Image (cartoon, rainbow, N blue to C red; front, top):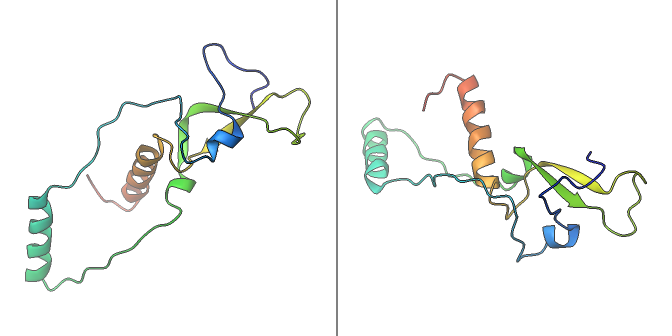
Length: 120
């Protein structure tokens, strides 16, 4: 847990962290992963020819459990007394509406799939 604000950084307030219009100040340049229609058509035709079944799922808490690599500091909310020496809280897991959340979740998923011998 950081005890003081690092140089050249601005902490994010807890109120703005859970506000719909919150924009995180730390931005990781990343490439957006998109599926091509031809890839989907190939997958469907391959699955149909081999009599595979499709299942759709929605992981509601996928972004919440992804560890993040960046150091993100949150201001301590008034009324929350954890430690008098500390001015900030360290964010260890990704939150919704963070620009890092999809990339963090994607990297976490790739590592998990690699354990089970999937290749990219």
